[in-house]
Each structure stands twice: as C-alpha cells, then as structure tokens.
Image (cartoon, rainbow, N blue to C red):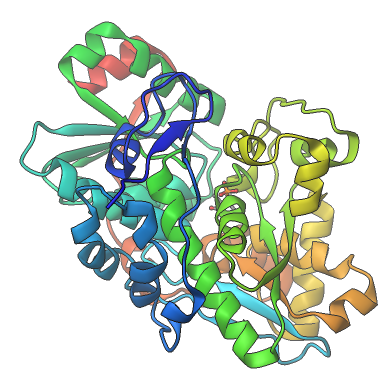
Amino acid sequence: MTELQYMSTRGNAQPVTVSGAIAGGLAPDGGLYLPARLPVVEAHALDGLTSLPDIARVALGGFFEGDRLQPLLGEIVEAALDLQAPTTPVEASPDPLHVLELFHGPTAAFKDFGARFLAESLERLEAGGPRLTILVATSGDTGGAVAAAFYRRPWARVVILYPRGLVSPRQEQQLTCWGENVTSLRIQGTFDDCQRLVKEAFVDASLSSRHRLSSANSINIGRLLPQMVYYIASSLEVERRTRLPASYIIPAGNLGNAFAAVWARALGFPIGRIVLAHNSNRTVPDYLQTGVWQPRASIATLASAMDVGNPSNMERLRALYPTVDEMRGQLAADSVDDAAIRRRIVEDYAEFGRIWCPHTATAAEVYRRLPAADRRDRPWVLAATAHPAKFPEVVEPLIGGTVEVPSSLARLLQLPRRFQDLPPTLTALSAALE
Ligand SMILES: *Cc1c(COP(=O)(O)O)cnc(C)c1O
C-alpha cells in the first residue's frame, strides 16, 4: 500500500508520514503539515455507523495510510473519542436550527477531542522513550484540555504557561488542579508573552539539549484530524433528519475547528455552508472583505479563547485556497463585539431556553444576522465550543440565574490549585524547567 505523505505549507521540509507530522508538530521549515492529497472516503462505508470511534476508524483511515500508527488507529480512537457530541435541535426555534454540543468532554470545551487524540497517538509513539516536555501557552481552554489528556502519562511532562489575571477563575482552576506530571506557570504578562516564551524555549540551544521539547497547540495535525469526526457524524445525522446538507456556524480563533469542518466537506460529507464567527479580532473577516491579509495584535474580549490576531491555521487554509476568491468560495466570516455577545446570551435564553457560553454566543449572533429566508430554508448548526458553566462571571448575571455545572467539571473545581508565579523571561522559564 502506498503511504500518504505530509508536506510543509512552506515547501522546504522533508515529507513525513502522519506519525512524523504528529510527533513534529511544526515542520522544520516553520510551516504546517498537510497531506499531499486528500484521502478518498467511500460514503457508504459509514452506513449505519453513529459512534465517534466507529466513524473515526473509517473516515480517518486514509490519513494514516502506510504509517506505523495505522494498525493502532482503532484503539487510539476508541480511547480518545469516547465522548458525546450530540447535534440537538433547538425545539423552540421556528426554523431548522441545531446545536453541535462539543462541551461534554472532561474540561467542557471542544479542545478535549484534539488533545485526547494527540495524547493517545503520542502515547503509542513515545512511551518508553526519554521523557517529552510539552510546553503549552494558553489563553484559557487549551491548557486544561492538554493537562487532562496527558495527566499521569509518565513519558510526558506538561508545562502550562498562562497569563496572570487574564483567564477566567474556572479556567484557571482547570489549568492548576493537576500536579504530578503537570506544572502550571502563572506568567506576569499577556498571552502573547506566554507564546513568545514557548517560541524562545524551542530555539534555545541549551534548553533543547537538556529537554525533549514538544508542543500541543492547534498547529499539530493530531489535533485537527479528530475534529473532522464530529462534523462528519453531525452532518450525517442532520441529513438523516432533514434530508438536506447541514450548514455550520463556527466560533473561530486559530481556525483549527473551522479547518476541520472545511476538510470534512472536502471529503464529501453533506456540509453546505461554513460561516466563521469571530469576536472583535477581525483579521479573518477583514481579509475576506478586502482581500488584504493583515495580522495584528490580539485584543481582549469576552470570548477570550478566540482572542487571536494572527490565526495560525490560516496558513493551511491559504495553502489549499491561495486566492481570496477561492477562499470566499469556501467560507464566510463575520465579527461580533462584546455588547452583541451579551445581548445574544440574554435574548436566546429568553427565546430558546438555551444558555450559550460567550464563544458560542458569537455563532448564535451570526446566525441571527442571516436573512430570514436563509434560516428557514436550510438546516443550520451552531458549533457550541464550550459549556457556559466555564464562564459563570459573564453568563450568570445575564440570565439572572446559576448555570448547572457538569459533573466532570465539578470534580475538577474541588481540587487544590498549584502553580508557580513567574516573570515573563526565558531565564525564569529555564529555571522552572529544571
Ligand atoms: C479554542 C476555542 C475556540 C477557537 O477555536 P479555534 O480552533 O482556535 O478557531 C472557540 N471557542 C472555544 C470555547 C475555544 O476554547
């Protein structure tokens, strides 16, 4: 069988198979890995399958062709994707509106799917070898999901860097409740400082001679692949229910989740339109409008996990759709400010009885801005990327009540916090890594 090669978006790195791309994260030339071709998935091969692991085994098989992880894909997805991701109709809506609930994992955000798949894949590549130090700069949800996924795996150490005072109290709890092989560093700086420190650590010769450093952010293809699976499952379910392709509105930051939806559609699954909902960080909506790609510094919003001014996965999207017109043929995007996020949480709770997290509220707002005929004529699905119980400070005053906490989250909220305070310097980080 021929093997599927993964190439760097920048074209100056040796091709690798999927395990090389997963273990490497970033390609050595600084680009992002993409497969040389999109595998063919026979739609009928999924007939009758509904669980995420079953769908994943078939739909992801081609991506692992010729790789040493291929025979292990079944057990990887069995362990990683044993999560619920239901697409539920919004009963109170007069139009065919649905919600893809991506918040039923251990840390109540969609990042759990990618982090768990990455951990199970790396387990099968790294266990028994020298210990891997996984550096994670986080603005909120990634760090918790990665910590939960790698906790108590002796071949890995997770080091989380998060900005002091800039994550929600419950997010901070999820970043600091672990101990054992997870170290939490509270950085006196911004998220950009945390990211800069991680980059500096990677290029520092003395650090990389003493530690095997790796990263787990959404540039890793091992986080994108499993995210396709819930779009495939969801689109097939909506098609069964409505006989029409599902259109998705996706809260977007680094575009990892959105990229997975675009890929699922490219594989041939019944997905109609894909619309990105950004917060006030407008880089992508502005690009689609003006054709000028202009990354900028991020600004802080209520949907903080989407506070990204230079979305990393745009490099993958632009590799696939190089001109702005090609990109416009694939995606639309809109921007939602904090006032509109608040208003949407209030109004949709009153009208639908649904409680959105601030990120999901951007998608709900973009939905409301669609022409009425559009909302009536095709089934729309909002990707609900986090549970509202992660953001009670924002959500509870708006709905005038408390949000029930899912049991997995409640358990984490009771654990003691452990963290180290650190200035935003490489010297301090180096000392903390010893
Ligand atoms: C990370 C995150 C996003 C943004 O996802 P990307 O893949 O970075 O675009 C949206 N919502 C929540 C809750 C997140 O944690």
